[in-house]
Structures are given as C-alpha cells and as structure tokens.
Image (cartoon, rainbow, N blue to C red):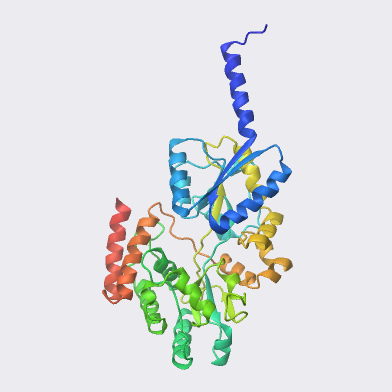
Length: 411
C-alpha cells in the first residue's frame, strides 16, 4: 500500500479543491430585469458546459452591495462573478478586491462603448481592467413629438430650449404639463440635475476630489432647473420614478428630463400607453457644453479571491459577446454595451430609440470617481430639494451643499 508524505497529501488536497472549484461557478447579481438577463446567459452557458454547477444569486441593490463588501473585505472567496454598480467600482478596485482581467486573459475589444469601459478601469479610463461592461444604462430625455410639431417647436438642443418648450406647451395645451422630473430628495433629484449641471460646464467635485459646487456655472444650472417647476405638475417635489413614468404613459406631460432604457418599451405599448409612437427618446440636451447624460452602467467582475477565477472570466466573456448581447437585448431588454448591437437591424426594429441611446452612451458622463459618492449624493439631494421647495435661495443652497460635501470628503 502506498503511503503519501505530508507534502504529497497537501498537494493532493490542493488539486482536489481546485478541481471542485473549477466544476462550480457562483454568480452574484441584481434582481429584477437584470436578473432576467443573467438567467438567460446562465441557461445558455450551462448548455455549453453541462457538467458545470452554476449558482446564481438574485439580490436587491443594497443587499448585493453589502454582501459583496463583506465577502471581499474578509477574503471569503464566496463568488466567482460579481455584478457591480459603476459607482461602487472605485471602492472595489482601489482596495484590490477585484482580479486584473488582463492577467486572466481576453482583454477587451474596441466594440465596447468607451464611457462604459472607462469606468471598468482604475484609475478611470487608463488603468488596469478590473471589469467588463454588462449593462449600458444611460439617462435619456423624452419629448412628445406630436406636441412639438403642433406648436412648431424643434427638438430641444439646449436646456434653455427645454424651458421655452415647457412654457409654450403649458400655456397652450390643456391638461398637459410642460415637463416632469423626479423631485424627491436624494438620488432622484440629483439624477435629474446632473446632466443639466454638466451641460453648463460645472461639476460636483473636481479631478482632485475637491467640492466645486459654489461656482457661477453651477448656479446657472440650478436656476434653470428650478425654473422648470413653473411648468411641472403640482407636487413635483415629491415625484419619483412611478409618477414620472405615469405622466409619460398617460400623455399628461410634454417632456421628461429623465428616462431610463427599462422605461422606454412601455411607451410604445398601446395596452399601457395612451401615446404610443408619439414620444421621442433622445440624448439629453446640451448647453455650454454638448450633451452630458448620466451613465448608469453595471459591470461584471471577478473577485480577487474567486475560487474559480478562470471560469468567471470565461463566463463574463461569454455573456458580453456580441451574439449574447444581441440575444439578451431582444429577449429581456437589457441595454447592451457594444456599439455594434445598437446598430443591429433586428435590435433597432424592436427598439427604435436605440440609435439615440447609443448617441447618449457615447457622450455619457460618469458620476464622480470617489468612494464617498453615496454621502455626497445625499447631501446634494437634500439641498437641491430645499431650493426646489423654496426654503433656500439657489446660491445659498449650493454654497451650503458645497461646504457640507467638502467636510464629508475630508473625513
């Protein structure tokens, strides 16, 4: 009988564990529509790898973040593939929690839309590739083309055009507000304001992480944003996503400064919308600068402690391939991150706004690359709403928000 030495036994155990890891893939992702996209990908990947055991977790936004942070920080080796919001990427990448995908092989090809790739690198745009873009979420703008044609209004090229159109339609079209947006404090109001802020050449923080909201350009942006309230529905300061979507689908608004890809299909569905085919979806207007829609990309990454890192990378390459992105887009509506898919005739036939969505993605702006963004967003959202409800003057609100953000960034 052969007796194994301690070293040989240890080696055999390592090989056994490695073999077990290679036979299993654990994928942690979002719930909702994103879960449908991942589920389809898993089914098709499983068909190619019938002996592979795949565990897919569906988690809400906060739950996914919390579980990911605990696992990565503790080096628990819980996941092989992790879906992350682009706002988490700075924290995850700077802490060394994600694997270098170039070292795992594969790189990334030029078909991926540049802004979605930039946030997958650290430092942003030029550093190590730590993720692959999976969801091409971008903030869009919507307007009623029938009403614009009726009153001789051109597609809004600037935010000042939005104000003019909102005033015209509010005054002339009974039962229709000129514009709608999310006025609820926190993320909702900030999301609507950022494309206006960026188009005015302003920002929340600069490249060095310093708060810069107390600028003349930021004040012009906020004054324009606040001027829209005169043409918005009563109570807009409490509006969130459901109210904005309802206003669009019921035909009770002429414009929405915010529309997300997942909302768009319902607008053309006669069973859900009273204005099918009448709403145009475009990239956000510009102002001093060109369009600056907010990027809301989701990425797929391999944790640095993944038991099956090579398998994780292979799955990511599979799910983000051109063929899979097309299949997933057509089947689930998950917005692609490859330019070629937005130009595909079959895809455009189903989603007529995809060329405009590609335009928006090509000019998309990511939220500041800071680890404290959630705190900064909360502060800014609070002061934006105070200005919206008239409890603070615009200049006062920006100066106070800037001071609070500056303190938060220094902690």
